Length: 226
Image 1 (cartoon, rainbow, N blue to C red):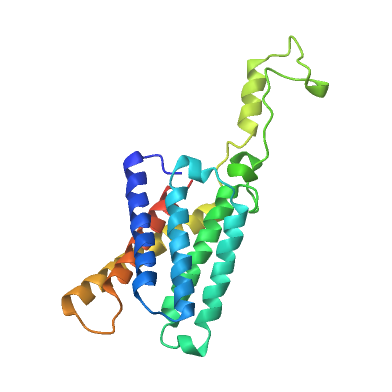
Image 2 (tube, one colour; image 1 turned 45 degrees about the vertical axis):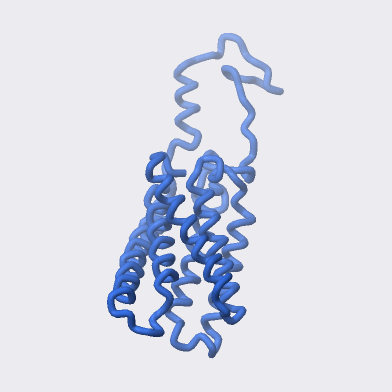
């Protein structure tokens, strides 16, 4: 998905470190099981984003991951509205929106699920194979000599998938880009505040830094989407 190799490695590093922090937090802390499930979901998300940053990863099927992150969104919504989540509803809502953004990204990458998308933008194993052709073909795929007209070739090529994505997709992608960029700045500010003030019960510093890295990686990924 990311064309620039350096930026691709930066994003990969951000998500790999985020996944490592989630696994470390699960190993050393004694959280209640809803919090543990949330950590697992964040780790899965970080791994999925790291894979998605690479061309082969962007070619993988998209429907199953999209459904998974829709269910993850529902999970965070369900946990957030419980009485036990009082005082953490803003954070819970943010995590739900992050999972929903993941589902949205997979839907955009699929190329066929959203209104206005053309089948020419299909990606991964969800896309239907396109038969190769040589020149123009008649019935049953037979070649028709004398019909190889360059003007017709250009017209045919321009009629298939040359338009960009619908305006609402581009708009929502930019909303996600700006939103996650703001979130990254917020989480980084909170991390620095915790490190400087060392106020107890303000959150684990590594966990806060993990959120900053994940938000920054999401902002980059949405920013480079067509």
